[in-house]
Length: 110
Image (cartoon, rainbow, N blue to C red; front, side):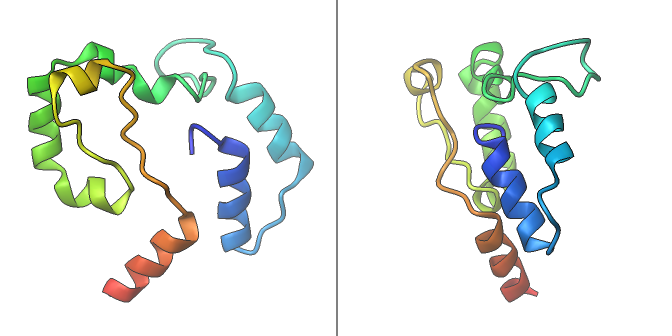
C-alpha cells in the first residue's frame, strides 16, 4: 500500500463497494508525500517510511522477526531477507500483492 497508495486505496474501496471520492485523493496527496510531525503524525513519505528498518536493524534482529512471523509475512506478501548483504543492499521485501486475492484466500481458509 505504501508504494502505490492511490491504486491500493482504490482497490480497497472498490472491494467494499465504496466510491473513490475526490477528498480521498486530496488526503492521499497531502499525507503520503512528506514527513511532517513526530512519530504519531499521519503525514509520511509513504515510499520511504516502510523500509527504514532495513537500515535501523541488524540482520540478526531481522532474522528473529522473520522466524517469528512466518505465517503473517506469507499472508501479507512479504519475503525474507536471506543474508546481511541482501538486507543492506536496497532490500525490497514486497512480493506482488492484491487486496482482492488476499480477501479471497482468507475466506477460503475459514
